[in-house]
Amino acid sequence: MRVLVVSDSHGDREILVELVERYKDEVDQLFHCGDSELEATDSVWDSMMTVKGNMDFTDEYALTQVTDVQNERIFMAHGHRLDVNYTMQELVYAAKEVNAALAFYGHTHIAKIEKIDNIVVVNPGSISEPRGRYSVPTYAIVESNEHQIEVTYYNRAHRAIDELSGHFSKNS
Image 1: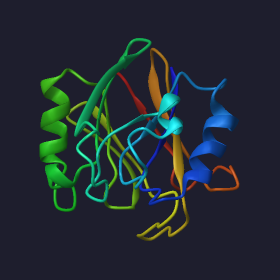
Image 2: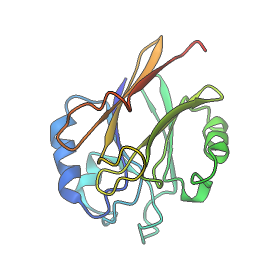
Image 3: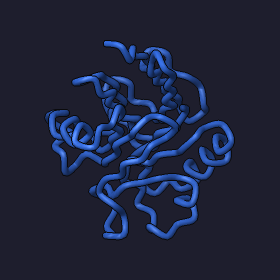
Image 4: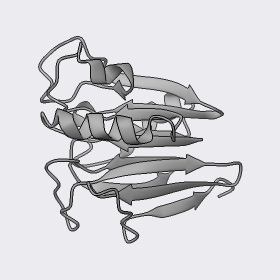
């Protein structure tokens, strides 16, 4: 399985179109973790699964999404309703409730990966308004096989950011 995860584009539609065009034939699914500030009817969503962020002011977006990509169940939420600024507990609990192996979220604008209670939790950072120690716009590619889950972060020039990337064994 190979998927792209992006978040917090805050009106920057062009970068989403660029990501779709670049990766549509290279990944199994594209995910947007909210705060696009685009209309729910925008054609970019024909190629990308999304959720409602705190800056998406329409009720046409779902608050969460659960999907299976190949043999991996993925839970996605923006995170503002799951208190992700302070704890991963609610996000991990929500992912466990649907038997997800991966949980994608945004909201904090900080690129971060960790494994909690056997769930790989991924924040792709913000593609347009990054925060945190590595304040560069980022998105992530998540790859999974029978042995491990690998997360690689990229900047807007599509260059890998090795110091943010990581991998997790599925056996521990």
